[in-house]
Image (cartoon, rainbow, N blue to C red; front, side, top):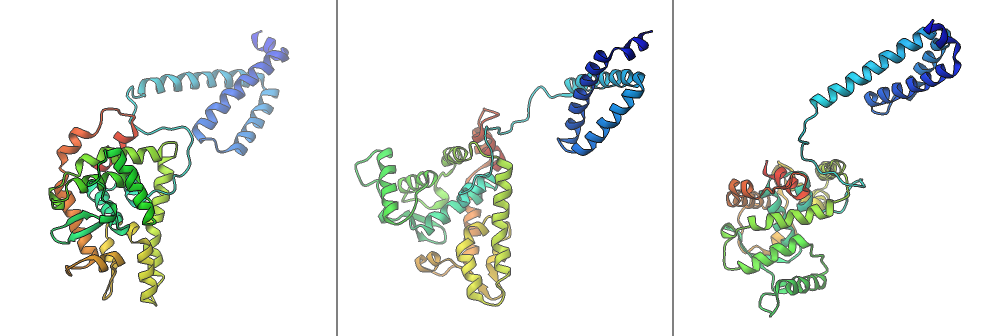
Length: 329
């Protein structure tokens, strides 16, 4: 009697059909991740024809769908972790372009010694600092960028440094300002005696500020491809050494983020050395790549693991804490 009543009531059949297709659509596209629209259309057409000729199948299908949805919701509620894994989530999206090599190194979870070495090389290239001694490394802020001999507070010094950088035709990034302030304050010390750990959190906070609103994973993929591009380009320049050296001169700061950068920069009997390294070093101590490796080694010995254990940050969804956690591991 109930089946006959259902068969003869067109309104009920249409209403239950709509409910079925809505539930089926949610279930189908949830598991297909939004794909398979053609398959969904074919299945829907098949269900429609079957329901028209076999009302009992419509009732059974709806009941089965309800059971599946309730079971799925119940299972999902039981297994869902009450503590979400920390991840950065922002409105907007897309790729963040325009990062410097040190900033990209933070994004790519490079070790802290690589990040610090990349920063120092960038400061040397821009003539913001100079090599007082190559081994053991001793750095000094360039006379054209010095501000501590002036009667200024830290904010005024930062403003003055930006003006001085413009006179050199360079851009001074906020994280670079942190390094200049510390190096000028510790001007009498060797590199290994300077506590660069105090700069990590403000440095990474500045990187987090630039990454806010962008897709981290898409941005990481972009910079991985950018870093891979330079070595590939250099391998295409096998015929002319000058062409290969020009490629390195343009891209060597990105190449330094590759694990085996020394094998890339030293090819055959040639060793790439940037113009600033050749012109400013006072004594010849090895190749540029070997000097960078020693620089990274110094930073690795300077920044202890205990620093990260006490400075990772407490906010699980804070991007700065996440980036600190990534480079610490």
